Length: 330
Ligand code: BTN
Image 1 (cartoon, protein in one colour):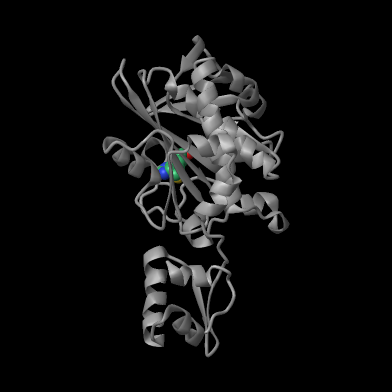
Image 2: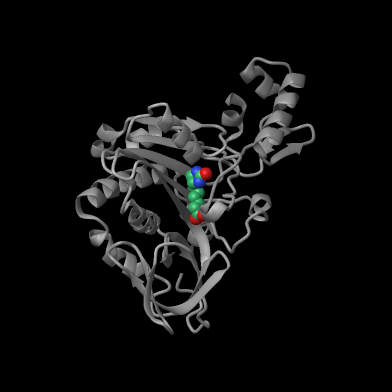
């Protein structure tokens, strides 16, 4: 949207200049500003007699920038790069697109998700232009068995991309929460559909909190953090470059996972595992299992030492029960 592009720099724009740039009347500009605020939830500041500005500047997603920052290998394998201003959910969109024949290697990003989805039916709070909401679709000839462990490999990739962007102290909580000081920095949602033995479609969605707005953050029901806080104001990263790094990392990881399974990712996972060796509680609906986390197996299962002996789990939500000796190790 042209008006948002003009305002994205965060500086003050007079109604008169905006009207001239957009070829509309000042009254129409005013209406368009209200629409931007109401539809996308953007925080607009109006300075009496001087003009309008966004409360926080936005680096808008730019396909040319993202494509330019991809490795040649990923660029060659990319079927389509879609960037939406507003969508219900990038993952849901790709699931729908897969039914209509979308090609393997389709990537979808959005500035704003109106119904972003998290694991276990949670909502993923997705304000406009603030964070990264990215999903990729890949098709595989054989059944979905074993693909679940790919979400752990994706966790390692996301953590690695964030570390390379300068975030120190990032950790992983099974199966794929990316944490910083026990607060959620990024999340991964893996969805697979298809026949048990036949072709299947995988949609991998990644949400990274970059600069969560204070207002939107109030709607999050778990401790969270954004990359701006992790890096400090001086360590700003480019959204487009980060998106490209994620697409590169995930594309490579999927190829590697299909060839070699979870094994090449396990040492990276173990190094970042915030639970290993600590008392945890695994919740599976109403069922709670207490134990000490032993790490993850080759199939991505969580291994727990419990009163009934060593047990392995493929689903559930882990919470750390450790009493804080080390205050902030992810
Ligand atoms: C989690 O609960 O940790 C998973 C969060 C995944 C959020 C991302 S944002 C892009 C993609 N689209 C969605 O609706 N969800 C995923």
